[in-house]
Image (tube, rainbow over all chains, first blue to last red; front, top):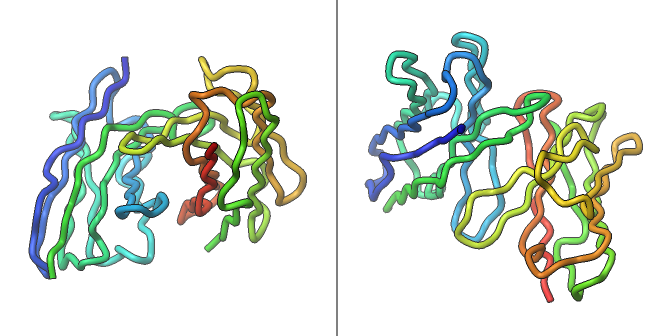
Length: 117
Length: 106
């Protein structure tokens, strides 16, 4: 059974850094498209980043240059390193894995990041 | 970036109603479109992929269709568990983008 469990969220001051983790089970992180998607309080979903086919990565413009996605195949874990955090980065962060035709089929429960100004 | 525009933003409906939500892409995404359902405090649930393919286990009252850059999610007979917010998402090209959501309420 595919499972994704996020951790690492919390309260951080503006300008600070945080690393989110997404522990995977039921599959190997090295073989799939895995994304981070966030949702600010009371707002819609925003796609943040993806890693796929080895170390190919892509980012939303809003986080490019500040966030880095990576994975550790030995730990079967996905990461999101977030630097220079801003108040507008406050959100629940979900990791999501692809399913049929690369669609975001599997989702974790999310971890809340709060950036105080 | 490809913009995804959903309509309506809010929809009031009753159990048993036929509900239709539309999502329009700012340029061609072929059929690389997914639909999700989200309830408050929960992760999104994957409903449909590649515009019209139902995720395993999703009730057959849900269906998706495509016509050019316009995509439609239809619920043939709304059930109590179907209330919440629906999102479309294109995954034709990066950055992947979501619609702003359609809240289905009583």
